[in-house]
Image: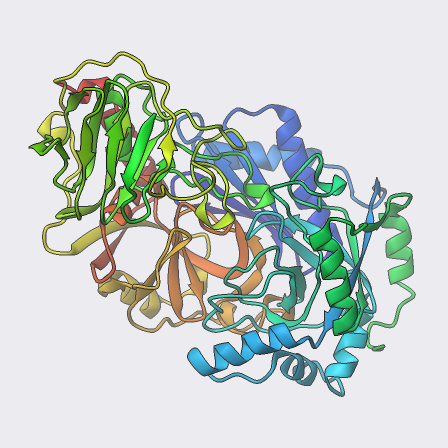
Amino acid sequence: MIYEKPVFKPGGDRYMLIEFGDELNLALNFTAHSLGDAIAQSGMKAVIESAPCFASLLLHYEPDLISFSDLRREMVSLIDTLGSSAEIELPSRLFYFPTCYLDPWTKACVEDYSAKITPKKWDAEYVAEINGLSGPEQLVRVHSGTEYWVASLGFWPGLPFLMPLDPRSRLTAPKYNPPRTWTPQGTVGMGGAASAIYPVATPGGYQIFARIPIPIWDTERRFPEFEHSICLFKPGDRIKFVPCSVEEFKETEAQVAAGTYVYNVVGYQKFSVRQYSDWLATVDASKRF
Amino acid sequence: MIDVVVAGLETSVQDFPGRIGFWNQGFPPSGPFDSWSFRLANLLVGNPAGAAGLECQYVGPTLRFTEAAVIAVTGADMTPTLDSAPVPLWRSVAVEAGQTLKMGPAKFGTRAYIAIAGGIDTVPWLGSRSTFHKAGVGGLAGSALKKGSQIPVAYAAGTPGRSVKPECRPEFSSNKQWQIEVVPGPDDDWIDEAGQARFLGSDWKLSGKSDRTGFRLDGPQWTFTAKAYDKLPENGSEPSNIIDHGYPLGAINLAGQTPIILVSDGPSMGGFINPYTVPSAAFWKLGQSRPGDIYRFKAVSVDEAQALRRTLDALCSESSLA
């Protein structure tokens, strides 16, 4: 649900978590970003930084400059000034990624977890099963059947938190218990109803069943896409996973290593919340691909 | 320059408060674990409290000074010597060109800090010299010191013979037990009363599977309120699962049944709940403990946590020096 009033929760002596709702909903993500932008524009010195996510905004504040209750009061009035997200139109880049679904690397990672930590069904089979799909092949069709919205960056530098824009591709799954201690670089996975790409080999909690051969962060800035930031994405970008074979994966991987890979990204489109909402109303979310 | 003769166990360049302002892209602050000892080391040699220095873990390095300097060693006792003569902790000391500072294993505490008058002069990365090991950025070539590395220093004058008043130094646990403050929240409402009482009333052992991103704790099972079960599927079905959200630094992040304290190089976001948060004023205790040590948590309010922070900041000032 979308909360009638935001909920303000403390995080130790210098953080405040503002929750706008407890569902995955593009409007909540826009609210989180709008409040983050409004704080930045207000020039409030007491807020050091903010981190928007799907349905919430985390504030890092300076307790020597403002108390928790005063900050809450300031946020309540700032939230009141935010306009509706319904008419927002923003430039939105679309990245196409060759994606090796049901790949041998994430499968080996799950097997390693099963052997060393706790026995677990292969993630592709498990996610298909709990979502009522016929099997891993349909999972590939459903997961790759939509554009994904980059809702925020976090967990690790440049890691995009993604939500499927087409409700027919919406899947849900629990996160690992306990989490994995490692995940192959470029792994695509999902947990809750969100998807993500792991920029480097890190621990992780998402169900994993695909991999891309393309860097999404680069401290050496080998490709022009990293000229302004070592993180490839920014919130409001979109991603399309295009299924590819192991051979195509390796071919692209070799191009990346040689520095000849050309990112497949289009920059001529705008995302219109109004048009998206209108389209959403026509879609039967219970249908699968 | 300072020549690294022996690297020690993960000795790294850090500054305080570290790499701030990039949480929304996923960059952690890094920085020293025990900022109390770190800041006092800098003040002893006349640096700003946050200037770049060295953090030594478990076993310290051996360093050869190519130029004369004023240094201070604080934090854990790694029995430092300068050309075999013992170096007092918590005191600024003159080093002559060509002398060698040798540190051993930590006898008391876990992390020691070395400040050099003028500060370490590596190239800042995103506004900070702190090392973020896992991403290979900041510090000296993005990693811990290596044998043969050379550390650039912006030498400045310092006053030898200054010391930190004994009552202004952190007191490390001598029996492997630590009382750590926690502020309930942001997600304490997901844990039932019995679970909260169990968390605050039990011993938690710091696991060997801990690193700079998180301190894993071993202890009893967690129990949850209805909120953890009666929720929309996009949260994830496990009770500790929530829609991905920003994590406070110091959060006690409940991944399944495993609590992990998110420390200096921790993740900025994720989909597990954070029932409690360790306030900044208690971080030094995390930094001076080691796997096998026992934590007992004590709940404090936001106001109390902020008061502790003010007390600590007041201690990290010129008035603590003699």
